[in-house]
Structure formats: structure tokens, C-alpha cells
Image 1 (tube, rainbow, N blue to C red):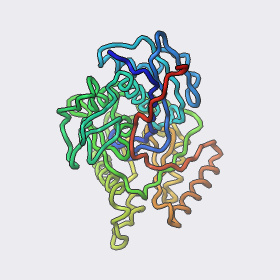
Image 2: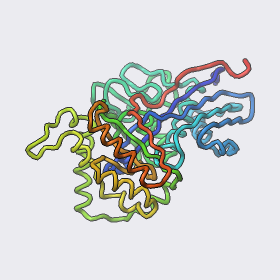
Image 3: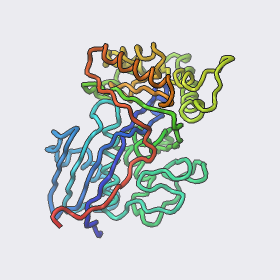
Image 4: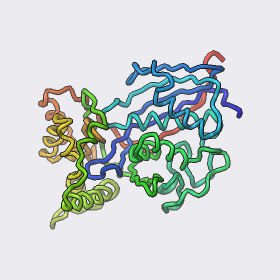
Length: 366
């Protein structure tokens, strides 16, 4: 195999999964990024990390980006003589913002590019994790229809888009964050007979995410252990309805709904749509400060949810030009300050492109 003789740079977005009722299914990509530079070395492994997780540079082969690269190289059939890696991490670790999905996707896309199978596919498919002209299932798109992933472009080798999605999902253990990281925008992910699938939708331009990053992490495994095996039928039914409403509220309702006569405006529909019965209350014991902040924000009419498995909180505001947006943002800031906890508040946008290879540069010292 002829290895790439330059540096590959990959950018991957943060993601927020669940969005309230869309448990293990919905994901939203956010404009907060990790960047990974990777290159082939004559021998050995070199890792440099700045920002989040800088202490993990000594992990060597156990570093998640390296593990993802090794898994991708294994699919292509050979391992490189050595790997150089430089990570600039901005996505907080263990805060419910998809840092592990981002690391896995970055490693797989970097390995694919270094192996010369960097997603140069035919029109109507996906390149470097970006969705083109429609929806996506198994990495295939076309005319707004959900495809079945039967064929890939001639230059994708052993890692067409469906293989990237499957491999990343296998490593992550669930597809919701991976789907949003790869596709950008709003994604719906599900699994059939062990095979992950996804649909990508375009959120309305008026959707304005605000993230309240918790000062300390909570392990996803610890949060999941608190979930019961059975839930009341009425709760499952309520969640199903709100999940459907949430997809509409994020993609349609704020522009189309008309208030009055029992019909909420777009912001009201989004608030109702983010109510959850399946997981947030059960997990509150592991993150009481998160639970308290979500409740206080919702009491002020703000569509707030636990981001992923927590402990960060995601607030979905609408229409930055409106007085309601400024009122809710000011209320959010005041409530966060009153908690006395060092939440880090960031106003972001929806990331609409997904993970991608940004550029190639000459090797260091060449």
C-alpha cells in the first residue's frame, strides 16, 4: 500500500444526543470542534495533545484516536510503519458532548485518508462525513430518499461511508453521537439486526443551542446503570409523541406554527417537545446539580435538557433577533449564576457539515 506522504487534518464537531425524549436516537451537531493532524512515520508512535485530555498523551496505543486509526487500518488490510498524531481538543471530556464519538470518527477518517481511501466518492453520496443533497442511511444519499447502502465509490476502498459509520458505532457502542458527528445537523439513528442506520435532517436556521458545561464529568456507564429495565406504558407513549414533535419543532414548526386556538408558537412547541420521561429523572441521582438546573430553566419556559448522558445541560433557544431570545438568554445566565456552580456557558450554532478532512500539509521537517 502507498501511504500518504503528507499531514492529514481532520475536524470533528461536538454533539448532543437524546435532546430530551429522543433517547439513544436523536443527535445534534454543535459548532465546537476537535482537530486532529495525523501522518505516517518511519516507525513508532508520537502523540501531542493540547487542550482537553492533554494528560492522555502518554496513553500510547490505548489512546482512543489511535485505537480508532488502528481499527480502520485493520479494515484496509495493513498497518503503517509508524503514526504521528497532533490533537487540539476543545470538546470537554465526560460532559455529554460526544467527545468519545468525535475521537473515534477523527481517527477513522484520518486513517482512511492516510491509506489513500479518503472518501472521493461519486455524486449523490457522502464525502468525508458530509451529507449531500438529501438524507442518509448507511452513508448513501439521493433525492431525499433513504437508501440501503449497496454501493460505494471506486476510490473508497475498504472504507466507504457505510463502513465508517458501522466501525465508529461498533467502537462507540451506540450510533446517536456518531451519526451527528459524521452527518452534521440533526440526525436520527437506529439499529436493525446489529446494523446502524441514520437519517440526516436540516434544522431550522432559527435554532440556537446554548450549552452549560458542567465543571466535573460523569461517566456515561454510571448514568446508564441508573436506568430501569421497565418503564410505565404511559411514559413510553408520552415520550414517543414528544420525540415525533421534537423532530417537527426542530425542522418545521418555528417557521410554520401559528399561535392561538390551542396551537403553540414555534418556541412553545419546542419547549413541549423537549419533555422527557424515559431517562432524565432516573439519572438525576448521579447529577443532582444538572437536574436542578434543567428544572429551573424549564420553570422559566426555556427548552432545557440533559446533554447526552450529562452532566452538561443543553438549552434550545430560537431566533436570535427576537426579544424572547435575549430574555431567555439573560434568564439563563442569571439562573446559572445563582446556582453558585462554575458552569461554563457557550452560545453555539448547529454544525451543518459534519466531520471532514480539512487539508493536507507537508510532513514536519520535509
